[in-house]
Image (cartoon, rainbow, N blue to C red; front, side):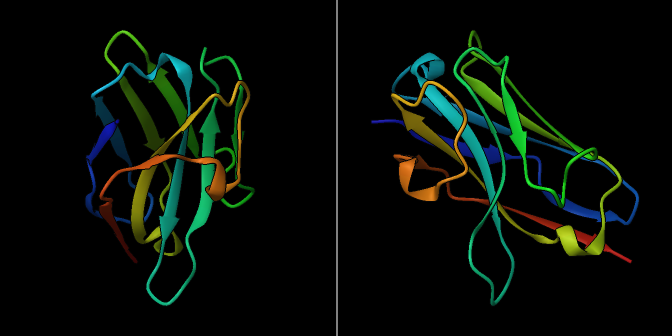
Length: 125
């Protein structure tokens, strides 16, 4: 089992930045692709970004490309999402997720085995 805990959410003005962290326990993350997803009120959970096990391959949703950066530190068993130039439409609960045995990156929610509890990000205009 893997437990994931997201931190770093909060309230920020448009144009500001936040850095989300996803700390894992129970197993090392080195064998897991990591992903970030978000869910706004009344909307389905959507893909934000994914990074492969070694950290040298990343993919982003078009809506965040150029503003968000995903990274990971396997030695610290932690993944990150740096969010810059935040917009009100980025407001959502952000979830990190881990996919075991996925060697590349993945945008598919159903491939992720473990999920965190989520952290709220609110961007005011």
